[in-house]
Length: 166
Image (cartoon, rainbow, N blue to C red; front, side, top):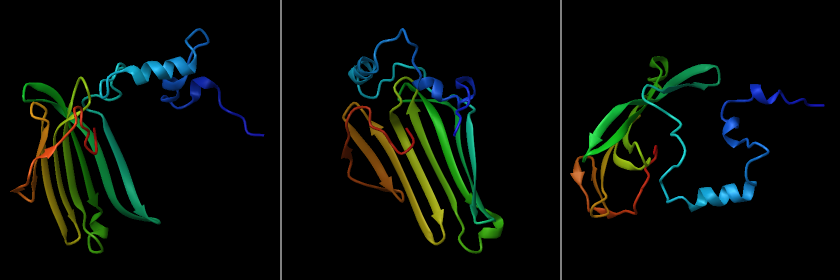
């Protein structure tokens, strides 16, 4: 027989999905969430400045690298307050001779609505290199982007567009 731990010792995120007996039914709660405008959360944002997630990557028992995701600070872009989020991936020094990785991805996410304002990606994986920059213009519903510093044709975007991290 498998015993569950008491509710109070479950992972913290489980409290987000728990409901009291006096609350509305699960179906009506889902309908309320779906009725919200797309991209506009009604609940508090689940991260803040200074939060960091670090992961170690291994190939069996051999350390292969590290990944870090960090909410660095807030920055104003086109008058809007945004979170500056940075992700880095690096292969371990001992693993560089097999496959060297030096990746950096940055995004600027609207503080109030969690949609993208800007996105930058710089990948260095083995011999592969890639650099992309995207700036979202919501006034004309376009994404202006550059591939390896060369401007490309702007792309139409929907309101509250998301990038990989937002």
